[in-house]
Length: 135
DNA sequence: GCCAACGTTGGC
DNA sequence: GCCAACGTTGGC
Image (tube, rainbow, N blue to C red; front, side):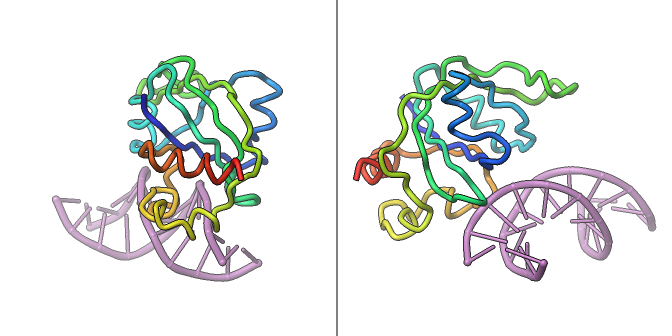
């Protein structure tokens, strides 16, 4: 199993909305690196859901329920989406500051490559953030 | 093929 | 609101 982190501005698409809808298509990715990561996702992979800009914190865990297929919001055939379902909300949301202050998490793309919206995590990194989230 | 100009993202 | 980072576009 692989581990990922996706970012969304809560104004654009929030964790709460994902919970309300029960599932979503992760559409609109228009960056090659992010797309390549989407293509690597397998059913059952775990995905941390990060709220950028106004909140800057990891709020929940989702899982991949459908592997990549063409993005219906694009005419071009080159962009893809996956389907995600919410799994659980973190008891304590994990802020960007907490992540920055955690030595084990100093190498993740969230910090190193702040504009990437879909990124892989190592299992240890995923586990560490979840641990912080459980307080 | 290079690179300046421009647009977008996202932290501060 | 500002601006750094960085991806994309288009002129040459």
